[in-house]
Image 1: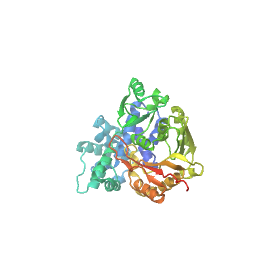
Image 2: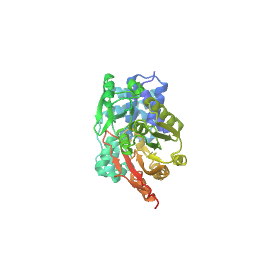
Image 3: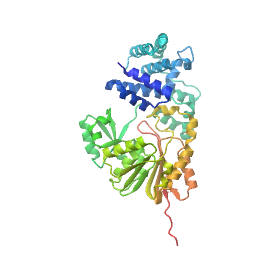
Image 4: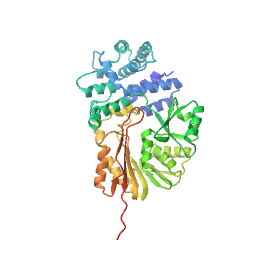
Length: 431
């Protein structure tokens, strides 16, 4: 019978071998293997923890290896990482259990020859504990402490300064808050809190977002009757803040150009009291299907989906009151929620601004005179954020910025995010 550690091993191997995403690989494993809720929780913690701290774990493992870590068989390295993570960062697991299970795992996965090595190395790791490097190179030190490639550490320091960079890196580790948005078409914040309390779910109000809640001790939210009844949907703080800036009004025609998973479309429907039209667009049919299913659960009758490349929407859509471009981005603001993002190839990221500017420019053609255009990303990269918007405004004098660009720096409670609000200048009547 499969165990939590078996699951973690298989998923981490798939991620290393195939470049699979952690959440997708975990979901696939859980769908075909029966695990207890406790094992699901442990497996998830191991996968996310090992991925999040991979560079840190390799640093501590390398201290006790006589050969370069890259020369280890992939299976052995994965098992060592799982064992080291439990020893160094999971207080509730006895050291003996972590070591013994790792030795069993190498035998089970065709690497019995490495049992002695795994046993010896992990015992040394446990005895040595956690001591981070303190050199005269702060980039290297931060890279090891926060398990981020040195190029990414340097990027954050250059873009936001040392203090904010450390805040970003620190926030990338550990658990994140789970935010939901109350479906105000069906209930109120107070009423939903009472319903969730009856289910044993602790809720915390969000001071500057009156229809947002933080959920604690929730587990699988899809099991809740309140979820099935469409009383709420998951949406991070920064995404909800973006909707506040978009400020959809009752009766508006709003186009959400890169909408999946749909949260901003859903919040806009609520703010519009389900009156008007929200066109929720995405490139992939399975994503627009998912948006439609959730809209039905939430009772959002003013929402329509369209499967299209955002660049070509302008050919069929005109005169929108508000257009939202939440463009594809590097995701550097959500590395705490999607830990594998930190290991992205920098050259791929460098190609994004040109695409983002193309999407923004094309989608701006759908905005009516006097209408609003909002550009947003979940990344912390001026080249994808301020630089794209500045280039757009310079190339499109018919648009003007509304207020200052907003960058949300993650602090362990919210994701990193960027939002820019622009207005298409009203056309002057001919003399």
